[in-house]
Length: 99
Image (cartoon, rainbow, N blue to C red; front, top):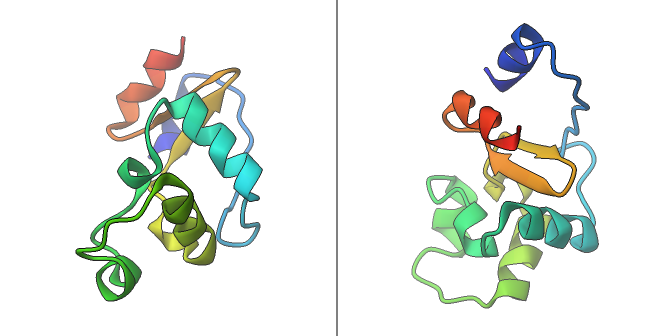
């Protein structure tokens, strides 16, 4: 839905398929800074990997980032980045917050 919205609004974009090209720890830390949120808030807690490996655990920032790198399906999506800002585009209309 986010891509269709970006196309409709004639906004250029680059798609990064993080399941095929897992971000580096530095990249993920940079995205979190742009999002302005702690790593745990970017975790998809409905994912089987979360339930199996992390549910009920208390991890620090670095450990949550490492968890997302090991299990990239845990990363909430879609993330839209524009310059020094980023948002999780749910609902899709949140993309307008980047203007």
